[in-house]
Image (tube, rainbow, N blue to C red; front, side, top):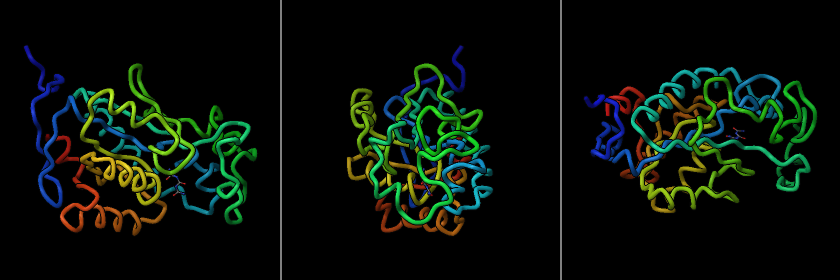
Length: 228
Ligand code: TIU
């Protein structure tokens, strides 16, 4: 008997905006951007920049549902984390010195050194960690293609379509989606599964992605994605 959620190459269609998004599960990846404690919990990088991190708590539930759907559908799952090596050799001084944060990248905080790989703050929030066989991309920048192996991973798996969730919408999610769009990927951003410290920036990003006939890609509600 075939489960309704058995991985299959059969084409699927999402009722998306500005128009329907068609994809085949075998050539589609979920890209979950930076669902890390450093951005979502108090005491991390996000709060050090002066942000109200409580805005991101509401993303965790929908992101978890989206991840569960992608796993059931048999999509390749890619998780990214923004962080730096302990010696900061991959952190441009411009990034570390920008502004007047309460603590800088590499400084000690309640979740360990801020935005440093291997520290508790740089880890995924509970429930959103990779499973065996899923891809984890550790990235030094906002875009997940910059100085990472993501292009090679997607090419090797013959991925053509990307479905995005994660934080923050206008920073790492939008940057990565634009990088992917320029590389020829068909990109869909799931509306409830992404969030910003600035709700109006999230809304503006969703609008600008799908404007001009989908200049960057598509957006869709989580319910419409999960119906596909
Ligand atoms: N500051 C902010 O909104 N975001 C980031 O610095 N990184 C990500 O978006 N992941």
